[in-house]
Amino acid sequence: MGKHMNNKQLDATILLPCYNEAKGLPIVVEDIKKTMQGTNYSYEILVVDDKSSDSSVAVAKKLGCRVIRHPVNRGSGASRKTGILLARGKIVIMLDADGSYAASIIPQMLSCFPEYDQVNGARKSEEGSLRWLRQPTKWFIRMLASFLANYKIPDLNTGLKAFKRDLMVHYFWCIPDGFSCVSSMTLAFLCNGHSVKYIPVDYRKRIGRSKFHPFKDTFLYLLTIVRLITYFRPLKIFLPISLFIVSMGIIKSGIDYFVLIHRLQLSDIILIVTGTMIGLQGLIADLIVAQKRSIDALLSHQEE
Picture 1 (spheres, rainbow, N blue to C red):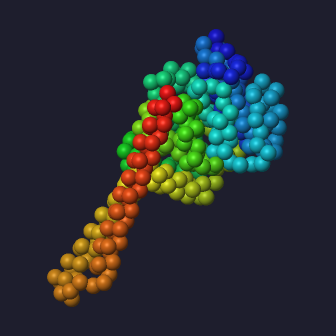
Picture 2: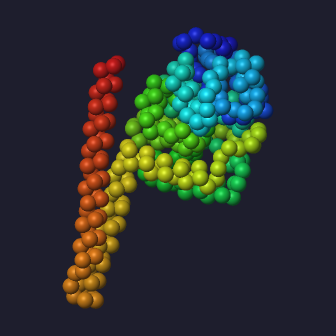
Picture 3: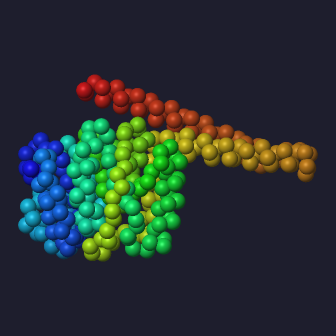
């Protein structure tokens, strides 16, 4: 039977980031308890409240959850980082408190460890608000992230994730406080050689009102993807830009010299030099990333 415990050494922490989710919490928590009763995993349910204005904290405590509350509203990513940092489980399972994911998938996710470092739920459908805008936007960003990470990502911003806590804390520095945090967690693992698995899951209409801002959060989401790839695989960003600019400079030089004015223009030289400089910056950045990765691997080996 599942063991709902408060000891320091637990198999799993089921983390529920929460902001005004008083309606969804009872359904989600009971679903978790019912699911975990049929397992032998020791676990805790940790609710991190991001300064809710409703009765979320009181509801969570009444349900027997361990509750941590932010003194000010800091964002979904900040709540997740707080929960991961204070989790007592070796594996952290993140679940949305709005009822959009079924807890019944948790045992299957846990069974993938320790073989995998991160396990994600890949949603079979999109049930969020503004589907006409969200679906094509998410598809584009997912394709871009898949290309940059060199991995076919079926669902980049799923809120259903399980991962080894000790690994995730190493990437706190690149995880933002907003909605794009879950994408950052995935890309941080993929770009650093950790094993990642996806499991198809059903996705239900959320309970309560969405806090996602379709334009502001989408822009920040895209910006985060590019920034993360620049952190971990800079040549994926710099090299295509460099080759494009240099190619444009060569083509323009050929047209100017052989067709139009039979001499090179200053703009031709500027394009080629600019493209070359961008490529060199990418190489330097890649060397810095490779050096940091080697140092991190050495320190990790020494800790073991």
